[in-house]
Length: 439
Image 1 (cartoon, rainbow, N blue to C red):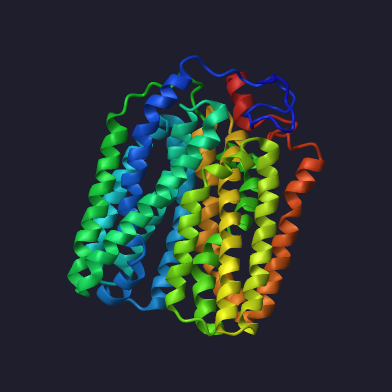
Image 2: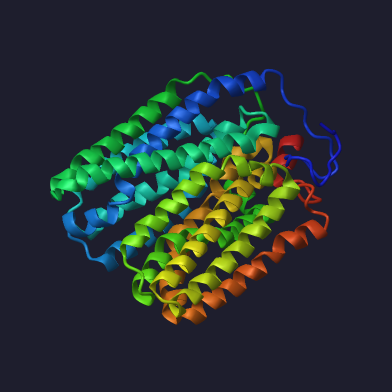
């Protein structure tokens, strides 16, 4: 591996042009030892999540007797609470490291999942959904930080690609179990699903609590909230990632509603097209890790993802102009475009977020960066899809395509400006300066 910073070199936390920090002795062996543990914990966690994920709205409406509008408002507020909570959680992760904070997050998530059984109105629903949102947002970046502390730098993208494949497998497995359990149509069938999810989170907490911490010693993370908020690179990249993460509300909110309200395609094809997305994610996430393994490739993957999303939006706009079979084919093509955008955006975010975060502040940076997904998926995204894109119809989809096409130019501008060799700018982060000066 070259010691000079080049556009094709893997992302590194230092400044552009500085030598890459050599891999620490023993980290490769540690990587092979911890990988089965973290993969097993991930499978358990996301199987537990899948048990309730696909049927949660049904539970809220039919069992908790909430209106669909109140559920939507509650989920949006819960997402906003999660964004605010990211700062103190980032502080905790920076001070104590990802492993103990992840253990606590899983235990809190288990309690909140059980709490769904006692939801009897909007306020109790809001309390539980806010806690769930906080813990769901915190888990992935803490796991990423855990991986980053143990996996060799050159293999982190591969490890995270395997992780996301396991995540999709877990969600699919949990969804299948939920489908079988709810076959009776009884409201009581939700109880074992929620209890099963809570048990899964307790098991994951126990796994991380008892895991041996064999990662090499590194600098103490002493990042403060002000340090994070002063890092314009972190905030700018977080905002950009939120834009390209709009594939989530497009896929989960706009697509099914558009199929049902604007086309002649039967509703049953929503599930089939979702299955296409899931199968492609499971099959292709790991093979595509070559596309975003280095910093330059990661930026190009972001550009490709935004362009694919733009094309997908145009395909959605065109679908109602065809008959049933033609619209189904166009919608299927749009879902495939969204899926490839998803794969590239998620993978590129791993490489560039690792690159952005100084080693002495990795956990805190990753936790705050992950708020971009919450903004896209829970807060701004659903409102944008229902209040703008779907409200305007074909014109809304075309406008969204235009914004995303402009977003595809951002990575190209970054690379052309000579910043593609590393996300770090010409000045060091506040955290790194304080660590070096003892401030």
